Length: 236
Image 1 (cartoon, rainbow, N blue to C red):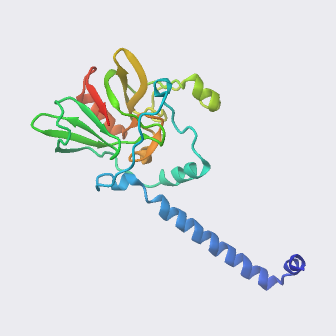
Image 2: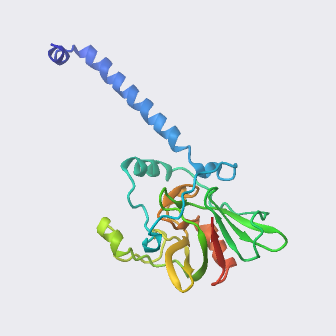
């Protein structure tokens, strides 16, 4: 009976229900917009922290991946956030909390910041994006090589999961590695992890990668110009 009564709704009742539906949809969209504004990047230096997992088993066989395995809600949120203004740099000279030798890079995964130790007890601090849950790691490595506007070649394992990806992407603004990349080596072995720029600046300050350290393009360029191949990197 309820079904038939709904079918026979009078015209003025239909107008009321249509208005109510539009009002409800607008309320939902407004709520989603507010949540999109709650990006940890905006509070990057406010003292908030995020949990860091231990180095995952089998990580030596992992490869870097970008936007891989995201759910629909994540993609929708990122689409909303890309439209809003994001800072072009997070660089700031601060007292060095790491007590490392000048030229050492320290990545504080928990607080999502990277320090480059300078002389006189100071350091340059940058905001970074880190590995998502299950893909964070810790250890001592070094800068094995550096590339400006690096080429990106998705590995076979990623192409199997994401056959829509290009087999090779030239360096440029659309490249996921961004403006600069510093390749992390353990001894003579490429760990497949990178410190690199990003074409998704709204992800800085979040845990979204498969272990690589993301930076704003202006920040990664600044770091790239300051360090040399062989520089020690501590990820904690």
